Length: 409
Image (cartoon, rainbow, N blue to C red; front, side, top):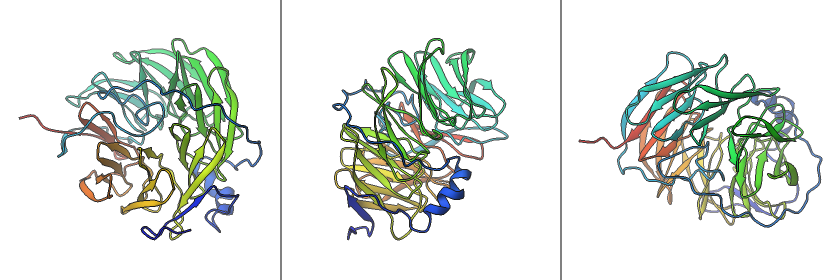
């Protein structure tokens, strides 16, 4: 069925379908290799999940401690931004780029870079406080809790650092690259690896608590809601994991691999795939409620969705930012950029901010999708905004980290 307002296709409770006709075979044969995903698994039965989890503790408006801002990966800022954003400072490196999203806590920005370093930058001034050096660098985003910074690198090593000094507290080695950002459950830290394992370690010392094995690489970040973790992987399934014991509660067939982090709101999870579809999943029933795609220009979703009470907002490789009705899966609006949108949008009040590979950071009206503001960053933007304490921070692949807010007289 087509939505007359947008021309985009939506489906309710679908049977198994072919997505992106003519592309899927190529996707499985070669495209996924370049993206780091293997062949999608079509095995595993579905199981009924437990009741929806209780809400996770709220995140402070002065912090953006996780990749998508909160444990449920909603991509919604708790604080506000000034009506008119101004560039306050730029932190630049000579080589490498900032492809991952920054974390913000206690007045410090933590940004992993492809030059091999994790940088701690003062949020107020843009001055470097410290750097932590590795060999290969970081594509995952830092996570901050309890005065510590947690982050995995491209060599497969997961680090815990002192947030004030950058001194290493402990590390843990996996069997493959880590581009999954960390999340937390009670006293434990969670992250995935391209070795196909979701790791649960004690946050204080890095000792293993349990590990959950999927059938292919994990490149998304684990989402946490109550006592459940949600992992969407290269095996083409959304896994629901019991955080107490590391066992599967349910899984849902997404029909194609995904690199996106699932956003969870109540009993619903929202995630896009390399099969050119955005899925809304009732994880309690282990059922797909609706899917959304662009039949006019089929394209992958590499962007992780933001979720409000009304809409799901997600970027596509069709150069569009899509706003979709959360309940029905019908398109509300689209906004056209000049290149693919691999970065993830962030909702701040009645605005949504997103970067594009066209080198621009956009500010849009959340209700209509109308452009309100833009900034020419120069380099490609693959990272997502981090919003805290009245400021927005985002990096580019040219090695520039920008901070926006309101200038004081």
